[in-house]
Length: 444
Image 1 (spheres, one colour):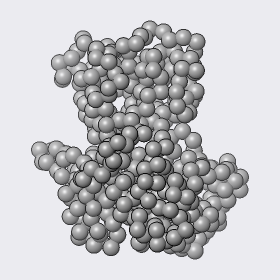
Image 2 (cartoon, helix red, strand yellow):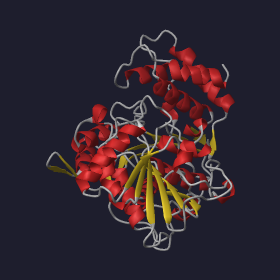
Image 3 (tube, rainbow, N blue to C red):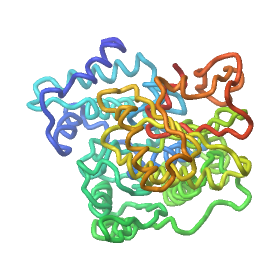
Image 4 (cartoon, rainbow, N blue to C red):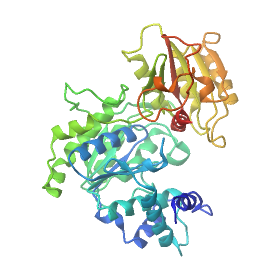
């Protein structure tokens, strides 16, 4: 099996039917001789912030000289970035080899694994074969029935900010969603709960962190609320955006919780808080409040639910680099199953213009025409009709000012190339948001 054949298998396996729960993935792993059993795992769930927390953890552990793995899906810029070891993406050859082993193991199973189940099993086999020291595993969705929920005794469980998303699968209120996320909690395991706001839903005030704490205690977990700020006062967070403070703080609480255990597991390594901070200072996480151009300012952020939109709004409001009186131009594409109306209610008050675009996945994406219509309705509701220019564009390239590629900064920026900046000035700020899949368009 070569790399393309492996991708085809992942895309098509399990298409005849899905069995909810973890029974299929556990049977598949058993057929692979349970590679997950020997792994030292930090398991991360949550609605927003999982990727950032995992990035901080990965950088900190790599800096200690540990061979740390990371599994997260879906990918944003490169397909193979979803499985990493020692800071490097898995190779096409290794990916094909791991998937080939999974395909062989799945032969004869009554229920074929889904693509996510198969890829999760392939990642765990790869980490076991490569003798990874520690792996960081990000839940795909939810927690209780997620295909990653197969670890009996992880080093730690981390739950980042919980909010309303994937309600059709996880529950229609924040309490139900928090309980689902808590499904990853294991007995006698440190459970780090990030700082997170209360959520009002259907006239009821929910405290997700409080719910998670009660669930942790009920399940026998060792609860650690990351409410105390343990970020060194002189440390400059390498990931921009005001919301990253809580993510960094949760990562630091996690590292402190597992530090002693790691020192016992790897006595030959120097594992200290200072080395953690040195590694974290090198962290980069493209697509999260990322400024990719300075004149005009272009910011991309994968915010795709109301809580993430509120965090984006707050980051714009508190961004000291943005001058007073700037014109903010929002560019948005979104999936149909997201609460795009509430996202617009949050974001439109800061906008001078709004442009809707289609997502690459037009089957799942909300059409630009419909997004324009909803944006107009929200403007009417907010009393801002006439103040905000609403339009649609045929592509992200069309929606953005034309920027020469040399003016882009940071990794993975090769799109929107042209020779000059048109119809924009130093007071113009373009904010691209609504879906992580939009981030890919900067490279096309």
